Image 1 (cartoon, helix red, strand yellow):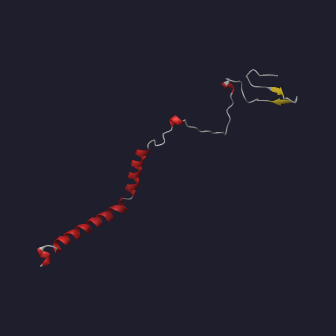
Image 2: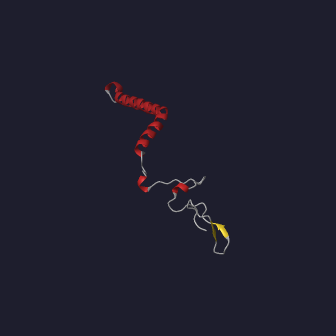
Image 3: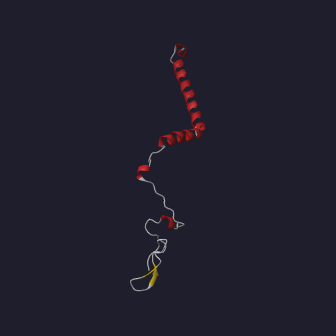
Length: 104
């Protein structure tokens, strides 16, 4: 017994003489219209020339930094403003104490 009309192997004798189903699910070479899709098997692949290892990294880094900094503004602006005011007061006080009016 040989190939069926759709190109699949029907039933053949094994080397020991028994009848077995041999390659019943495989069509003949090039008979793509006969393929039965298998279910539950998922495979993903990416060609090496299609990979972009740093694709969008600069863009994402900029906007991610902006988003994270924006969320922290109320934590770092008040200390900077307080530090600036304290430093400004200390400079003015030093100028006053080292002037004629401050020594008098």
